[in-house]
Amino acid sequence: MGLSSVAPSSLRTVRPGGTLVYRYRQRPGLPPVSVTHFDTEATHAGLPPDHRHAHDFFVLLYVEQGTGSVTVDGTERSLRTGELHAVSPGQVVGVGAAAEIARGRAWSVAFTPDAVPALASVSPLAWLHHPLLALFAADGPPARIAGPDRAAWSGWLAELAGELADPARLGAHEAVAALLTRLLVAAARLAPSAPPALDPLVERVFAQIEATFRQPVSATDVARALGYTPGHLTTVLRRRTGRPLLEWITERRMTEVRRMLRETDLSLDTVATRTGLRDATYLVRRFRNRYGITPQRWRRTQQ
Image (tube, rainbow, N blue to C red; front, side):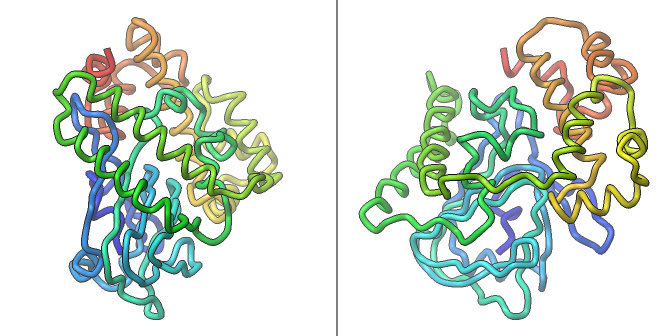
């Protein structure tokens, strides 16, 4: 099933090999969360064969009823009643020839970290170690929700969808954040007790990005500092994390840009200078390209 078809997304880029990458389409004045209750077979029928794609946002998929399968990063995953699937940004989702067509009902929750106060300012380089995202860090079979708990999950998702349907209602944004946090806590409790160890090379790359992203460094600079060619390190990082080197550098910068826009009244020129971007004009262009909204307008929605 194409998870991008049940989230407010738009095509961002196409990777070498033809994989489509969708970005979360920020809707002014609304929290970056969407919930969809859908018929899995009908959704699958509207997609082209082997619709391989990735997202730059997180997706939780709860199979309320039905069977089927999809592939995630080339590994087939079952779709069975009561299963909860976590798809991280950059992971490639597809329906291969061997996968079954899903039949049944499912809930999809697409979100960016800005939707959760506890995650809004967390570095993307630390996502896989944050307790709320434990299920996304797990590298194994999907979580399974016990039979007695499934009605509660359906109820939480329906409540979240109801709040999103009327975002102008008093307290709706706070309710959305609280409900999404509740879902992530419940999902994290279904994850393995210990997160997988971070790949040593990935850890070195992330440390280098963290140390230098505030400077006008490029992917070439980061790769050479670690003794690799940019092409080799980009290929390795994409294979091990689902995202190339430049995307991680950009994601780290944009997270800091959003934090500064939300928590300070600094000028765009100052924000640009402190996040390794050239100037306010370049920041605006990159921000609009990434989120579909200007940083000034985004700042107003957060305040």
